[in-house]
Amino acid sequence: MTGRTEQSYIQEIVQLKAENAALKERIKVLEKRLEELERRLGMNSKNSSKPPSTDPPGTMAPAQKRKRKKRGAQKGHKPHMKSLFPESMVNRFIPLKADVCTCGSTNLEDTQEPPRRHQYVDIPPIRPLVWEYLQYISRCKDCGALIYAPLPDTIQRQHFGPGVLAIVGILTGMINTSKRKAAAVLNEVFNIPISLGGLSNCESRLAEALEHPYEEVAAYVRGQEVAHADETSWSRGNNDKGWLWTLGCAVAAFFIVHARRTQRAARDLLGDFSGKLVSDRYNAYDFYTYLRQICWEHLKRDFKAISETRGKLGKIGHQLHILAKDILKLRRRVRDGTLQWKTFQRRMHEMQQRVETLLNKGAQFDGPLGGKCREILKHKDHLWTFAQDPRVDPTNNFAERAVRQGVLWRKGSFGTQSERGARYVERMLTVCVTCRLQERSIIDYLRHACHNHLKGIAVPSLLSKIVNFQKIA
Image (cartoon, rainbow, N blue to C red; front, side, top):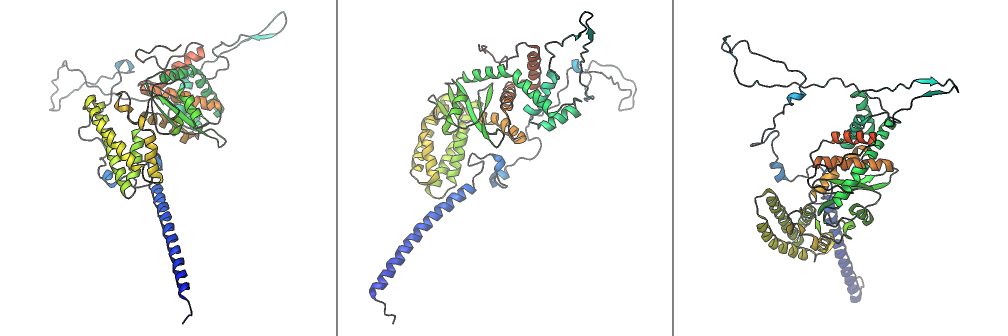
C-alpha cells in the first residue's frame, strides 16, 4: 500500500488531462507550422512569384515531362530558309556553267531558266576609319606667339564617332556584356583600343544623346489608354538596393531606376497616366484610382499554391486553378479570332460568379492561404477589366518580358554605381525594348542618334514610325 488518498489520484488525473490538452494544442500549432514550412519549401515559379531561375531540379510535373517535344523542327513547322542578300549588296558575281551533262553528253544549249543562286558570306578583318587633324603651328611675326587653327566644334573633346558609340550601346546595353568584355571586343574585333574609363565616357555620351527620345517615349506611354507596369530589384552600388521600374504599351516602353519600391516610386513611374493599368497586386499601385487589371498569371500561380494544401481549402484552390486556366484559354481564343467577343463576355459572366463564390469560401479559412483569398477579394473590382475592354490583356506578361532585359543586365553587371550609370540604363533599355516592339534596327537608330547629337542637330524620335503619332511638344 502506498498510502495515497483518493484525492491525490484525482489531482494527478486532472494534472494529466491538463498536460494532455496542452500537448494536443501544441501538436496543432506544430502541424500548422509544418504545413506552412512544407508550403514554403514547395514554392516555385509555378505556384508563386519566384523566378524560374530559382526552381530546384525536378520542378516540372511528370505530365509535363511526358509532353516534352523532340528536338528540332516539329511536324507541320513552317520552314525558315536562309534569305539571300539583295544583288545590290553582292560584292562579286562568279558565273558557273556546266560543261557536260550527267549522262555524259556535251551537247548543251542555253535556256531561259533563271540561274540557281548560292551565296557565300564572310567578314573581312575590320579596320576602323581614323581621321587625324593636323593643327599646324604658326608664329606671329609681330608678337612672336605660337598659334594653330582650332578643332571643329563637332570634334572637340571627341575621340570616338557615332559608329563606336553605337557598338558600345549594343555591347553593354543590348546584349549586356560586362565593361571589360566589351572593351576586349572593341580591341580584338574592331581594332579600337579603349580603356574602361573611355568605355564609361562613351556610355555617358549615349545617355546624353538619348535624353530627348527617352522623355518623348515616357510622355507618349503615359498618354495611352492602356499600359503595363512592373518592377524588379536593382543594385545601386555600395550594397544599396534599388528598383528598376517599367511602364509600357503596345509600341513603346520606358524605364526608371528608383531607390525605393514604394508608392512614391510608382507615382514617379505613372506620372499623369490615367488609362487602364495592368499590374500585379503589389500595394504600391493601390493609390491608383482609375481602372486597373490584376494579372491573371499571378492569380493562377496563387490558385495553384492554394490547391496544393490539404482539405477543403485545397479543393477550392484546385477549382480556382482550373477556372483561371479556362479563362486565359478563352481570352487567347478571342485574340486568335476563334471566339467572338460577345460569346466570350457571356461565358465570362458565369465564370466571374464562380470565381468570386469560391474566393469567398476560401476567405473563411485561417492561415496565409485563406489570407491570400481575402487579399484577392480586396482587388475584386480590378479582376475583370479585361472582360469589358478587348484592348486590355488579362496578364502582365508584356511588362514582365520588358523588364526581363533589365534582369539579365543586373545579373551580368551587378547594377550601377552612379546616377550617370542609372540614366544610361534607363535610356538604353528604353531604346532596346521600344525598337524591338517596332521591329526597328537598334544599331541603326543608335548610330543615327549619336551622329545627330555630335553634330548638334535634333536626335531622331523613337516614335517616328508610329502611325498617327502626334509629336509631343
